Image 1 (spheres, rainbow, N blue to C red):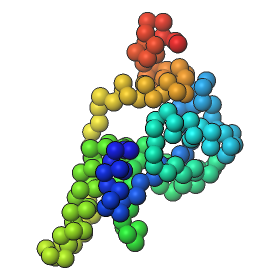
Image 2 (image 1 turned 90 degrees about the horizontal axis):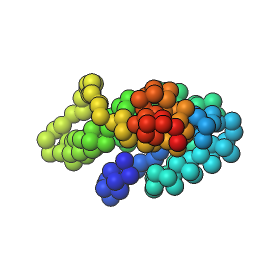
Image 3 (image 1 turned 180 degrees about the vertical axis):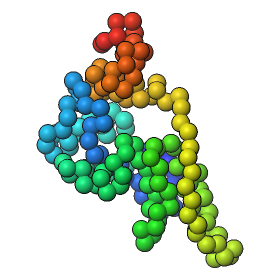
Length: 164
């Protein structure tokens, strides 16, 4: 997502990351107990994942997370005036790029081609992301990996011993 934010920055597209909570708290990253701790975790995340976008912190009760659907990895594109251009229950960068290109192209052509916005929903399928999420889950600890992927995930992450 960092690359996408950089590519589209010159088109008045702004991208932010909203840090809502630890998705899979574990030994290294326990459940958040304070805004100070959330700030520390967000700083760690920024450094480890090389995040350049602004990171906004949700409050401790998850008001923003609740307002935008409570799903774990959502992406929204919101146009001028609050028009929802894209909403996804799971972030897939290639799909975000397609939505950005379609939205941008529509805005560019709307006057000359008399385009009108139309709403649609569709289901997309994702697969083959386990390796990436196991690697990301290592920052939280083995418990997070085991909860998401079971003993096989632990073996994949840490070898035959299944623990670091």
